[in-house]
Length: 117
Image (tube, rainbow, N blue to C red; front, side):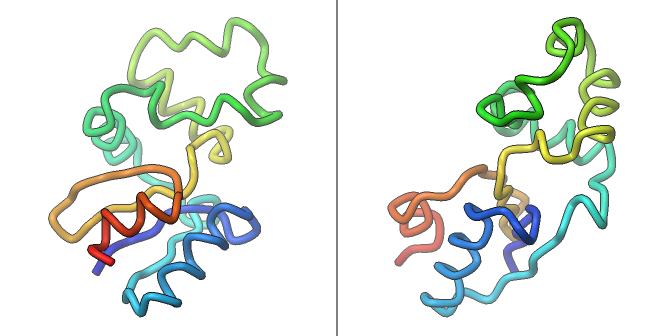
């Protein structure tokens, strides 16, 4: 069963969850603020996506309000510490397929491709 990681009040997560319900795609939702994602998992997601930059939401106010020195983590532990401190920096939603494949974000066409609808 696919896992959808996000925040319950996030509009994009709500749209993604509604899409999954509309197309009758069984899934499990994980609020990653209430259930923090382990650092090793975050690192694995970043590697699959092509780097930490692909996992981070730089469009939001949290990123814009970070001190400049916090915006350039130099190592995996620095990235995971940043995401532990600011879980809302993770792009939403993160979809983890049963085979372990990871994708981020939501678009209607993207989900149609992802879930074969």
